[in-house]
Length: 260
Image (cartoon, rainbow, N blue to C red; front, side):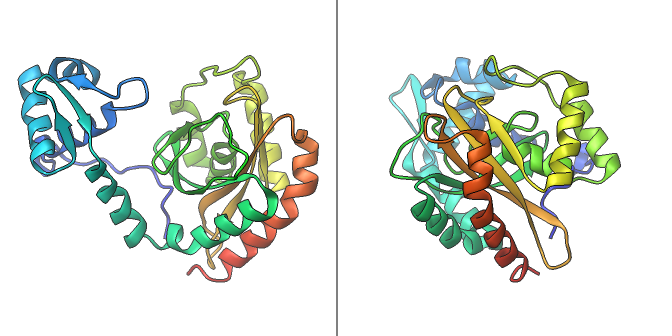
């Protein structure tokens, strides 16, 4: 099971344009765009307002969105899609108890992430009682270049796929600490591959540090990444590696022994 491969090219005749637009519209909503008019939604994904309105009304009809006649927003029904993924995909189901146990034991937030194009996507999560500022949930996406999970997944790819991903991703700066120099980043990713883990030191958000390890199946394929995130005032990056890595490696071995 390789969930990390790049999406293969597909002929236009094999695509359903309306379905693609509907899915794009779902992704157009986020924390900064919780409620949108059809024109605003159309601009966000590059389609006509009329097409956006039809798609949004279809989502409302299916119970995935709501409207007051002018603006649209996602409803609780959209969680059915998340449940369908979690219920039908073995990795999140297998890992959720491990994430819960890790989070409880370490008092940090634990996540499972998988490669999704040139980003990583959170596939399962367990949040510590000591809350973080980063509002991550299942389906949240993070950049490859500066997230611990992204670095682990990127550094584990075969050479040709690594180069394709490295050249395709945008090295944007999220904080003053974000590493964006491609030469230094390549060197860091080589170190991640050699060490078997990656760190992100306040590069996604000031005050938050993360550590991640790759997850393997029995065949040795990398199928995801396991991460723990902590407030920066709780421990340094080196302390994270010293205190959290042993438990993460035990979880890594447990997953590998059970995932075919």
